[in-house]
Amino acid sequence: MEVLGAVASGLTLADLFNYSSEALDLIHLYQSQDADFNSLQLQFKLEKCRLYNWGVEMGLADPSKRNLLHEWHSRNLIAQSLQQIIHLFSSAQEIRKKYGCDNIAGSSASLVGSSPQDFNNIGTAFNHFRIQPTTPETERPSILRKSKWVIRDRKKFLVLISEVRGLIDSLENITNDLSSRARLEESLRNRINEIANVDTLLMIASVWKGSHPRLASAASNKAESISMSSGKQNYISEWQISVGDEASEETVIAKIEDLTVTELKHSIVRSSQEIEALKRQLENVSQTRAALIRRMSSLDNSQRSHFLRWCIFLVALNLPGYLWVIFPLPPF
Image (tube, one colour):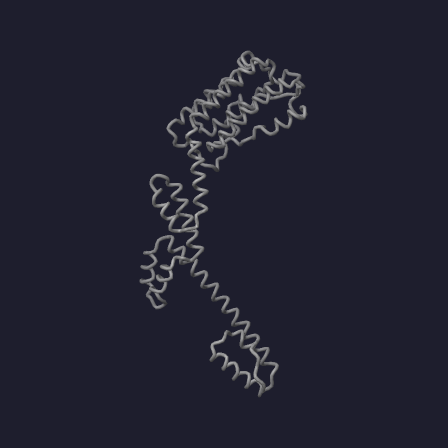
């Protein structure tokens, strides 16, 4: 039943956190009409909830989130505390004698499923959310898949709750500074996302580049996003003009190599906008041509000649093409 040797090495903090959560799941709660006993079970559930919430905040419960403990100086203390939680459930003899639990196989108690309504509602609100372990199923210590336990001795089980609570208190206390900094960083990141002034964002990125690189990167990315969408990078347009249509291939390549990635992005966006504008102009010309053909087909020879002279007159006035059709013809 000893599991410490199996988890002492080769596992990440996320793995140890998963095992700790599963170890707490070895205690199964069962129906009771006794309010005091239900309160005892709720205390245990709340400690499970605290452990899970701590894991979420540290980035251990979700692999997609940043792990705050990855480069932390006291991460070994975290590993030892999580191992200690697992150790509480490593011996069947201690679970039975020290903590007053019975193996579920030999128990006649029914598991929680249709408990009294009040307790069921509270229990659901604080129920432990199942998380996916980072270690494959076949590599898990077998103790986490074997014995299941139910509470038999209230006073002894209070000892287990007290020990679990103490270890979770320790985890929260030693990582309190990390949690505060993480919340502060998230708050600052949200404030950065609300800033719409590019110069302000670039100043933040410059000032925090050394002390807060993640926030500086967020400010820089936001500034780049705003400048690209608003088209404020006029130097891109100036660069395109300086190259010109008649520039040699070597000149164009040299100019491109001088550009930064951001400048290239702006150039691509601007070119795409110009292409879209040209497409719209071509569509207008095509529509105007079709309208003229329809109008010409409805006129006789003398009227066509008069109509063409009128179109030339409109061109001379530099009126938009669509007015050629809708502008009223003078009387013949």
